[in-house]
Every structure is written in structure tokens, then in C-alpha cells.
Image (cartoon, rainbow, N blue to C red; front, side):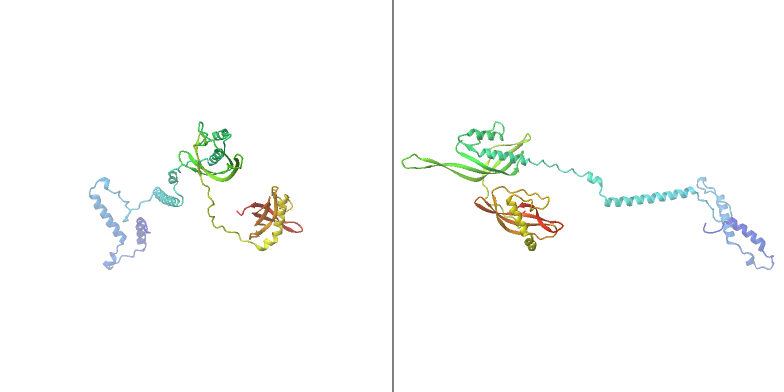
Length: 376
């Protein structure tokens, strides 16, 4: 302790050193030198005197500390057991483990979200199933054709056609007075607008042909009648309802007007063109359309391409224009305007042409890989 020698060893060494080196006593030695005392001896004697005074005073046995080993030293040496050292080290290890665990848990909570929070989140709201628009359009289209077709000479045909798309027991006359004649030339179902209680409203555009008879007076003869026809588009809003896994018409429709023109389109960007490539491939496009009109495109299309021939009755007038899109590589596209003759009329149409470069050992050329109408 504190780097000092054991008091017992100190006393023994001092006695031996005194016996060897002590000089002969001289009567004339000064009193100050003869009375030189080692400070350790003075401290030991003072401690012994204090211990004797303390022992003379009685005290409770429980509070009396164990007597120190009488070694003549002013302190008592107590050996530290190895068990206390191990316990202290274990406590320090547990403390550092708890600190480390707290740090790791905190960092993980910052990086990884709490799973319990996600588990406790409310479930997503259930959405209602989509309305069966395809079935509604099919039923409304059939109804529109039957509803707008009538012939005063055969009223039963209309009733039978309506019964197929109406609920059982419904009125199959649907407000018709059983007069006149009218035919349906085309039916185009449109938007389906769901309302309430599994009901919906289906827009149907119908092209009808109405027959009207007019009397023409003749001199000296009875009035003759002449039939005139008129074709027009009309709109119908057809009410339907979904029931028992099917869609049926619930009642009379309402006639509505057909817009005279559509809405304005947004400004569409046209692709940049490559004039040099357009001139380079102009003959390729002309040859293709001549073969296209003739019904044989195998010689002007790229290997593996399939282009069905046009129907009979179409004659090529010519390619009005060809503009190749800007680009690079072995596959290029462009827009062609072509004029056809159909019967006695001519009509211009627009095509998007896809070209591909076909190379052989001797040369390379551009051929048509695909074609489709419009610019979209």
C-alpha cells in the first residue's frame, strides 16, 4: 500500500542495522543527538497508546471494529479477496452491456420504423366493385336497336325483340302507337354513368332511317304515294339496373341530341423530320404502296413482316407526301399521305410507316417492316 515497506520488516531491519553500526557510547554526546527518534517508532507508540485507551473504554460488541494485527505499524493490512474483484468486473460489464443495448435500440428505432405502428394502422377502406359497363353497353345497344325499329305491318317483331332485354312482364310496346316504318342502320353504345341502387344510365348513339310517304296529285287520276327516306343520328339515354347477376333495362329511354362537332383537341407536337433520309427512301415507300394496292407485298416488306393486302375495289392514285422522322439506327419511321380511288371518288388517307435496314453480302436497302393508319 502506497509503496511503503511492511512495518514488521522495517522494525527488524532497523534493529539489525543498529546492532552492526552502533558506535561506542560516549559520555560527552550532546543530549540532542542521543534523543534522535525514528518517526515511524513515534507513530507506532502513539497508535498503541490510543488503542490501549480505546480498549479500556467499554462499547457495544456490535460496533467494536475488529482489532488490527499488532505489527507495530500505524495501519492494518487487509487482503482483497478475488471474489470481490470478479464481482466488481461483472457489474461493470453488465452496466456497459445495458448502455450498448440502449444505444443500439435507439439507432434502430431511428432507421427502422416501428412495426407495431404499421400493424395498428386502420385497414384500407373497401371500395365498391366496378359497375359492369360492358354488360350494360351490350344490353343498352340491343334495346336501342329494338326500340327504334318498327313496322306497322309487323308490330309483333318489335315486341319480341324488346322482351329479350326487359324484365319479365314489362310493357313491350314501350309507348309506340303501332304506326309507320323505321329501320336502325347502326348502334354505338357509349358512356355508362352509374347512379344509385345499382342503376346506371347508358348513352347510345343510333343511326336511323325513317320512311315517309307523301301523296302526289295527278290530273284525272287518284293521288299516288311516294316513299321518301331520311337518315339521321339520334342519341338515347337508356336506364339499366344490375340484378341477379345480370343487367336489364328498367324503363323507357329518353332521346337526346348528338353534338354537331367534337371538342377542341390539345396542341400535339409533330415529330422533327429528316429531309435527306426522306428523299433516300421515297422510292421504297412508293414501291410499297403500289404493291400494297396490287395485293402482293412480299417483295417489298422486310423478312418476317406480315402486311395483309387491301380489299378489292381500291386503286392507288399516288403517294401525296412522305416525311421521315429524325433519328438514327437500323429502324426508322415516317408519315405518308396516300390518295386512293374508291368507286367514283377519291379519298386521301394517312399512314405511319416503319422501315428497317436489310443488309446482304452485296448491298443493303430499306424495306417496310410495319404499317398502320393514322398519325397516333
